[in-house]
Image (cartoon, rainbow, N blue to C red; front, top):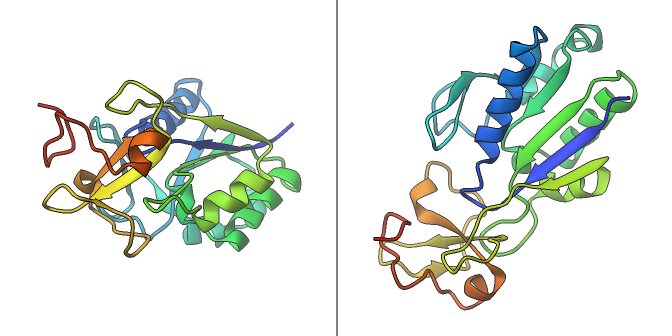
Length: 197
């Protein structure tokens, strides 16, 4: 029975690497999985999904998948959506249609909330509609689970205002636990590359 999965985590939790590994696992077993992402995310190039650890794979954009007939999509064993936080409510409802009416499993990977602590539209709808929710975990500099995304400026100050989406700025984000996100604390060993010394 097909299900809709939402696998979410903070920045740096290897969500994209997990999506690419899931795609590889289907291929390794002789099954075709369709790798998809919103066109808004082109920071790694046109029609490419790339993880921070260097894994890459070609993909199609969400609107291109949506233009395909249901029968054509039913030939895939699974649809894997990266950067699912950028989906709209309507696009998530379309994924529900693919699962419920077409019998296609859909695995979505993305952020739950933005740097201000607000839910993305796609994430909110996935939290409501998904059959299975799974947190992809990473840790804060203190060793506790990181559940928040901090955006910082060139001087290393934590930002809590600004545009929700700033693409191509991976080096301006870091995952923090709630306590350190609330306290705007990037850690004692923080440098402007987002890592410890």
